[in-house]
Image (cartoon, rainbow, N blue to C red):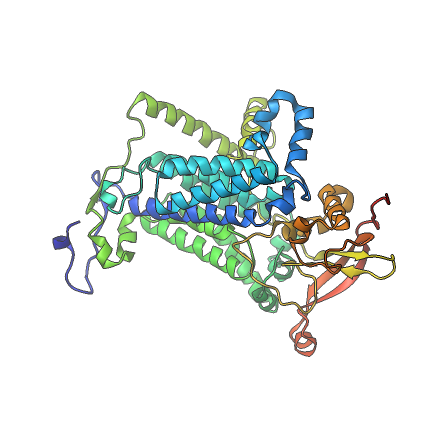
Length: 514
């Protein structure tokens, strides 16, 4: 678009349109924005992990990655390289973990500024997959898998050369890659809503799940307390609206443009509401980034500042052909396999294909180590109570002092704080452990051992060490039932929480005396 073609009226009646040469919607601005948002998500993920990686999986961490690989090598033999795909086989000590996080951070910056985006995305996917493998329990969250799956597909969406200021000089958008990313968004949302229905959980079926959710979610924030106080009818109405958005809006992802834009608005609105009442790391931003792919250039160009519009050509290059060469044929065949397997994985997650054939089962198992075809299902069963683990130490076995975590509930008067998009992975893992038992969470024994040793890297993951670096002789974990206070109690006592002791979670532990 030239400067002469721009409307001179400050309030133009008809904004410029953007279509491809073949009359199809153009997605250059959409791709430009999506790739930068994805770069920001990767940047958050790597920097967040960098701040805690040594305490979690370092040489003196809770679950040392090097020890994990050593055990795997003894048990798996050569096939370990496929089953555990990570560059950590070249080294998984503290220095190697730092290099992995630093390289991921640098590649994220390259993607954000638009330098060699395809290469940067391939590097980011490989680095993050390596860390997910090394991270064991601490990097097993659904948004870690969603980032890997979206990041892998984005490699084929990104141009191989830098993202240029003049979008008219960018190569066309691959319809195949663009469609697969929208298919990922559809699958993710349908599974998120579908698992709630097929789980048989009464709280979802009678629409009362949100009467529990705000206080039982992993890391509530201060707004969660206020949301919890809302009347039951409002929670039921909100729950019904959530089902409509998660199950109906995704069906519009491949519809006509206005319906597609409506789906985007509904899905983004849901993510903003979730982010406003809980701390879900980079999950909400990643989902919003995928939603951007539903917006074509004809809509986005209206939101571009006028001084930038002259950089955008009036007509975009035609979309990349789906099948234009033997190489494209190989790509199309790969995409067909990916589409088939992801569809079968979705059907399995929703209970529609429990009895898959052995070849299909084998194919899904074969690609599982790459974490690029995943099943999703957040809060399939609503937790209606909040068991909370409180770890305590003692020097005499009589007087016990609690360790205070940075973000999870502990002190009853401490205001719940927003921590997203950072993910304190130990705090998150403590929520899952409280729903299980000490014997089923072996990593927790590693945490208690490091506290008995006074390990500085692990202590830095906590908000307060009651023994100020001098380790106690004994540690234990107690289980409490936590609940939000009501408005009257909070005004009178200043307490956001009330709790009741349920009993011991772990035995009293100590190190052998030398």
